[in-house]
Amino acid sequence: MRFITYNTKNFRKIEYIRYLPEEVKREIDIVSRVIPFKTNNYVVDHLIDWENYLDDPIYILNFPNKNMLHPEAYQKVKHALENNLPTKELTEIITEVRMAMNPHPANQVSNVPHLNGRELTGMQHKYRDVTLFFPSQGQTCHAHCTFCFRWPQFTKELDLKFAMREIDQVAEYIRQHTEINEILFTGGDPMIMNPRTISKYIDYLIESKIPNLKTIRFGTKSLAYWPFTFIPEYNEEAGEMLAMFRRIVDSGYHLAFMAHFNHYNELGNAILSQAVQNILQTGATIRTQAPVLNHINNDSEVWARMWKDQIGLGMIPYYMFIERETGPYDYFSVPLAEVYRMYQQAAIHTGSFAKTVTGPVMSAAKGKVQILGIIDNPVNGQKYFMMQYVRHRDFTKTFQPFFMHFDKQATWVDQLKEVVPQEVMAI
Ligand code: SF4
Image (tube, rainbow, N blue to C red; front, top):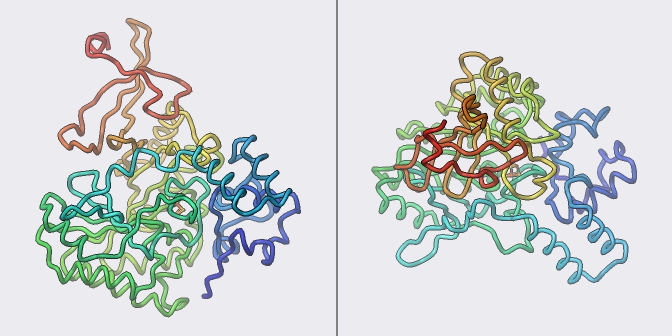
């Protein structure tokens, strides 16, 4: 199967634009100068319902629209394009708009580790037992999600990328930090690399025989955006990719394939089922994760059905995230109270196997905060969120419940007022 990319440069030339009226194309052109836009022929031909594309969750997931930018920002970029401002001026306007959209939420830059006095700019080490690795060749995806929290990875102009290719230094860092037992290949999407490139990284790690390294994890949306990666009948390189997975498993590592699905519409075709079965046959485990997004999956029935479909295919629902404060956050965010109620309903309707989901969770600066419940205190008439860190920079602070004052509108933990120790007794 030939991979055809559609992006800002070529989207006017391709066949699918027959579905799009001029004004919609114009909007995509303007907004995509700020929000990286990329889709492909599988998404366009197999996932989007073009009869109702403006409400279609996968269309919204891939195609930027006017409401994703602040009205003033939209007008600025529109004005610059309509008046053919010189490239330098246009770039400055776009950079200014992007910088106002919090490109690095949760202070990710503070997680970059050092080896022998040198900064390892393609790694992050936030949690004790796991390190993230951003291989240089994996810093794009088969398509780009409009909500993406890693969007600066896809922009040339913002000098805010994490990336490196020196796997020897990554291996040495892991060897020196015996508390690390897991490496997460992330991006972008590591599965966008061809099997020869990714095998070089993987085989180096396997051959290094680092005693403390037990798990190799891939964070990827390739199953949703380009499942042909894992089907030899469609893609001549797929056999090599699956063989590399088998090498990992046969070498004694746990291979954790973390699949990102935002809607059950990404799960309903035979190509996807085939890809899932092929991966599972290598001995890998597939766990699933996604954020709750207004306009895309803000509905407990969508989540219940998505989890049930994943379980039916042999995958394990793992994380329900809360959308991070970055990019078109105002468009996609959902109040915490609403997300929690939705999680409850989705879990109730999924049944026993929903217990494998940790959610809803915010990836905040100190760690991953899970909402455990909303408590009504009949004595003082107050409401509280009960929360805990399921991951924390300081691992001794995990799994200790704490309370925050309830706020119906809040969409992130730092918008909530802390409950001080004296108040806890009243709860
Ligand atoms: S697949 Fe992941 S990294 Fe890639 S655009 Fe989507 S959210 Fe971002």
